[in-house]
Amino acid sequence: MADDALFTIGGQEFKVTSPDRVFYPATATTKLDVIRYYVEVSAALLPHVQGRPATRKRWPEGVEQASFFVKDLQPGTPPWLGRAQIRHRSGPKFYPVFDTPAALAWLGQVAALELHVPQWRIEQPAGPMSVTNRSDERFPDRVVFDLDPGPGAGLAECVDVALALRERLGPLGQRIVPVSSGSKGLHLYVPLDDPITSSQASEWARLAAEELEKALPTLVVSRMAKSLRPDKVLVDWSQNNRSKTTIAPYSLRGRETPTVAAPRRGRNCLSQVCGTWTIGRFSTGSPTVWTPFSISIASPLHWPRLPATPRPGYRGGQQSG
Image (cartoon, rainbow, N blue to C red; front, side, top):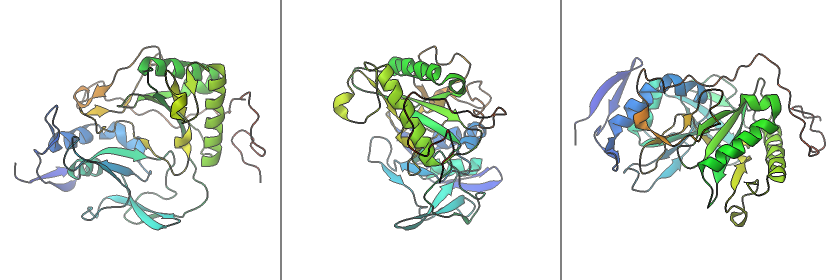
């Protein structure tokens, strides 16, 4: 095992212990490889996670061994790492907020291969003691649909569903940004001009998923029941809940090989099946390290009128009292 190493990343001194520890045995990908990846894609990754309290999934002994999710800051967290105190019913928890290349490098140091974030941002700028009060609502700046193929379906069917959803949403559908999940499915992000409530986002996404299921009953399912899923694609709308998170764009995945949740670029990116990409497709200066999708769009957002009747009080992105 190599000696510990001291690096300077983004002006922060950073100690890496056991840099040659292998996290992905199938590809001999080491801790240092993971750290290098996160630093190299930081310019593309950070805009998607800045201001979002992060949950991590850790594999301390590598992907062939046990993993676990972590929300709280663990002992030994560097003092310069951004953090937010979120008040839950069970009490307050401190979450890390990733806002610098050095913060992303820390993910590799603690074997946190996966980075999961909500669709909303904290109410105050991230800092050593940034606080957001617990309330009944959060205010997401994007809506996400997680397309998850069931047995007998695959990524090709996910692309078919994505195209159908894009068409059904009209002008709003042209904003969809697809991200191959790094696993077996596809994430579709709809950027918002102005934040709405998590309840409104979840309700709108649920209606969209249910209407798509009605239109394509042999291809789409909007309910979680396993018995409904063979040969179909689940359009999971639930990750818009204020308590849920989604794998961050550009995050690694803890699979046999170091796959990446990769945003897809280009107007016709949904017209072809995009395979799973791995860490080897990304390097400094490579055209595959794409700029982040925009969440600042000049034209006003108009929710599409779905055929289903919205719940009482719902008025296209505004909640009446």
